[in-house]
Structures are given as structure tokens and as C-alpha cells.
Length: 99
Image 1: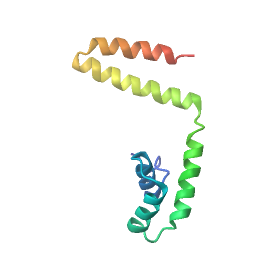
Image 2 (image 1 turned 180 degrees about the horizontal axis):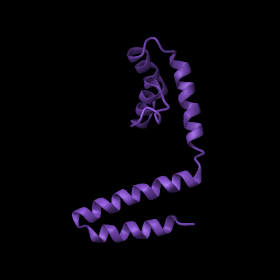
Image 3 (image 1 turned 45 degrees about the horizontal axis):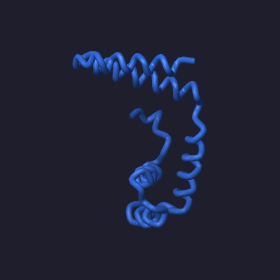
Image 4 (image 1 turned 90 degrees about the horizontal axis):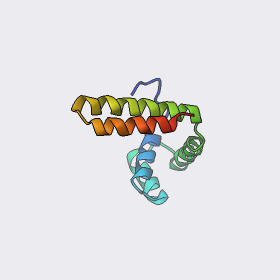
């Protein structure tokens, strides 16, 4: 990942990973204290909450563009391995994304 794209500092990335793995807020606070003792755990958790809130309001065109690029990559890989049925399904999914 390009440094220009990285927007979350390491403690926030760790918290996001822990959240996605099902950790509770208490477990996350304890892990932050252990792994990042110089960080304010409560402030980091609040920053992550803000990040998650803004992530919940994505730009529809940007998400659709991202999805189309992902489908293109999937299509290329399926074509490379000869999964023509998968290619057909990807094409159907792409058509569904079009306005």
C-alpha cells in the first residue's frame, strides 16, 4: 500500500484489526496499553470510532468504481485460469452495478 494512501496510524490499524476479529472494547483497551503504552487508549478508540463513522458514509460513485476495478481483476484472473463460467458471472455482476 502506498504511503500516500495510508491514513490510519499503526495504533488505529491495530484497533481496527482487533475490532474485526471480535475483540471487546475492554480487550482492545488492554491490548493498546500493552502494545502501545505511549498512546492514550481512550483517545485512540475515539479516533477509530470517528473513522468508522465516516467509513459508514462512503461516496457511492467511489465504491462502485472500486467494485468495478475489483471485478476487472477477478475477471482477468478467471480468464487466465480458464474459469469461463466465473467470467460470465463477473460480467453479470458488472452489469448490475451500472446505473
